[in-house]
Image 1: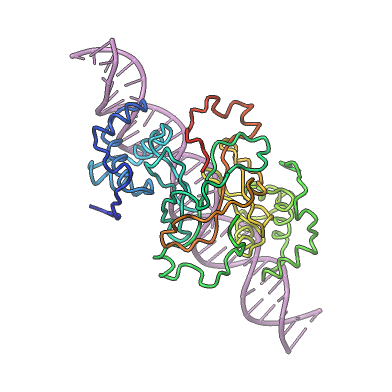
Image 2: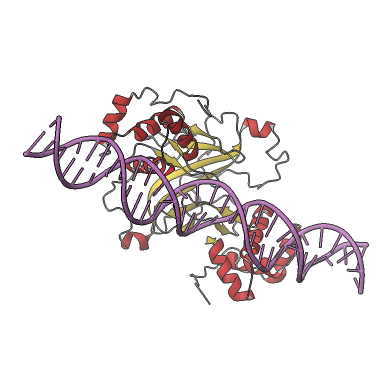
Amino acid sequence: MGPVMTPRTSTYAQDQPADLRQRLRAAGLRVTAPRLAVLTWVSDHPHVTADEVTTAVRERLGSVSTQAVYDVLNACTRAGLLRRIEPAGHPARFETRIGDNHHHLVCRACGRTEDVDCLVGARPCLDPSDTSGFEVDEAEVVFWGWCPDCRDAGRAPTTRSHHEEEGRA
Amino acid sequence: MGPVMTPRTSTYAQDQPADLRQRLRAAGLRVTAPRLAVLTWVSDHPHVTADEVTTAVRERLGSVSTQAVYDVLNACTRAGLLRRIEPAGHPARFETRIGDNHHHLVCRACGRTEDVDCLVGARPCLDPSDTSGFEVDEAEVVFWGWCPDCRDAGRAPTTRSHHEEEGRA
DNA sequence: CACCCTTTCTGGAGTAAGTCAAGAAAACGA
DNA sequence: TCGTTTTCTTGACTTACTCCAGAAAGGGTG
């Protein structure tokens, strides 16, 4: 079954096709096999890349064009069914956990991404002090670091010689 | 002088070549014309893209390879003389303001990037509640929105129909 | 100042992650 | 069952870089 990754039971893991159909229709999107397959997979495997989704969907449906996968991911993201995360230097990842504004923990080496439910210190006020006239509609927080695997594999700097900024705001 | 952009007096705008030479040497980097030109330009024009830097440096030096500009930007970033910002969906931007961990305001439409000195509410504690075993060394905050120009040009959604998440953590 | 060893720059090919476009094939309301 | 509209397929193209080999400087040494 291809590159099966630890199938975490996500918030939406109980999505059955019937459920998904409704959500697609509600979003004004037609129900198609590629869409059901993509949404189901992303739902069960948060933070997958387009490439991983493509592989998985092909396993299930036999053959789906790369473009179709991108179209599905884009349409669903636009419709609010998916959320796209684009960590600097890594391909985009997708998740079905939307509607709350949680944040992410990203491994600098392998790109592994995990959710961070909220920040300690109870909802710090994430408003910029000066918006320079911008109309701000989202505050995105990414915590950069090294996942256990990459650190153990020596892909993380041992001496903290990297960018020494004490790293916190 | 090419695409001259509002030359803001940055924190490091007073960098004179002599000064830059020292900083390069201190970082263990050789002093070369491309490096002086790149650093000077970025210093005076925070948040420029590699492409903009290339254009500007060519204006000044006559001819510099694309690769040289990338090499300089990468070497200086690695050495801690520059900071790279990579807003999702936009090419990387560079700045000389390092050593403090300020954040950024990015326009979804044109990628225009501005500094946010700090968050109101005095240094919210930006530590994830659960690091999943990750060794975190940086918390990055990006405020997404629409710059005045793009909003006026109608490139921003008028109804807040976009991703309605109330946008704050 | 001349030399030599590195580091850096040049020029050109190559790559990853997508996007664009035209036509074929499906969805689904009537 | 039809007709319209959306979606999928195929395949070229793009953007923002990186990789490579060789030429051209830095700059410490004698």
